[in-house]
Length: 346
Image 1 (cartoon, rainbow, N blue to C red):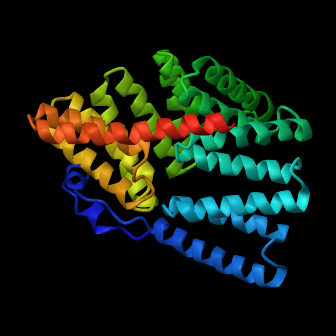
Image 2: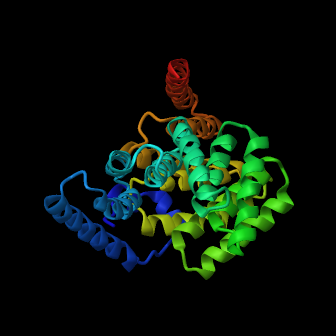
């Protein structure tokens, strides 16, 4: 994928990796995305824009757009797939529920949990009724319910649903999905059951590496690093974050919010280990990624600004710190007002 110079030229990039080879899979993804886009256009012309036979093209194209950081287009494609499935098969059909679950997962990946939750609940109800409680599609929804619950601070339900998802994988599939292991590991870390979390997340990482699934491995590395950050095991967290960042920069679009999260984690480690100057570089890189993509004005940006304010305070830059703090509070207050309004409407 095409690299933007403001990412590659950043000083923090040089801190991370003195030498980074181009990944040929990135250009292959661009080629695949272009092929799928042409296939979609041809199918639309032949079948019409609302034909359900477009669904097998829309789903992989949406995933490639997500990986390329074209998040607006990825969301539009997922919404379009849901609309087509509902019109063609009905609101309570399996295709409609699968499309709901896919759109919900995109929202979760974008940290838009309020948008994801009603879709996850509706999809889970339909899929359980139609396919049975132990179908793979239902298990994936369980894991997403756990992610939403964890984001809301409801660790009890998060643990219950994550445990169920992994147990069904073991019982039915013979082995757990690394996606399910990651959410269970995250919940266990939040519960401060660090030994169990370490075991689960290392299992996920080993399975990702064995399957040569680099993007999945990056997510496992990131989750394991976050568990170590919780334990103040910063020296162990640092190489995990660096590796995750290298993978994401190779495989994702330059303005992808997951890259911003990588640099945010890197900054937290630098700040905690007495390197506030390096921390500011990492936090500024995270902010640049968010500002050039879909992260402008989001709570994710606000949390980075709050940590950057701490770094600036440590360096004695009080005016900068106060300005960052005010902007972060403004963003978070706006988000809280919007959440209250949406809850009121529901």
